[in-house]
Figure (tube, rainbow, N blue to C red):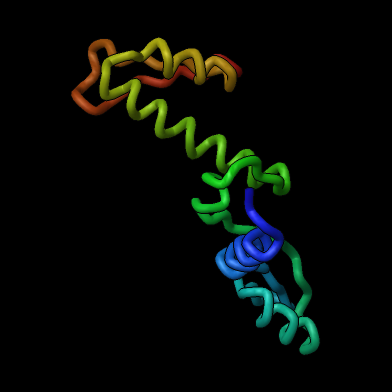
Length: 124
């Protein structure tokens, strides 16, 4: 079992690795900046219009992870893409189709060049 100092050290390390990016706007100009720069620019009259958080891989391997829903969606989509690529390499198009069906799509590799897939959007 970890003692309190080890836990604090671990989380301090994660805070250093995590990064927040902001999108700021002033007039017709828009820039992406880090959190310190965003604070300075806010004092200069820039408006913060978006906030993005980045996830460090070590955050995910340590156990449960809590973040905003859009970050969780990004993590899931990244993992799904890996799974779909592995399924494609193994010729298991039905796995790709099961995932694609959730977005009202259908995928086929029949009569397609190597490395190409046919996509049908059934949602329209």
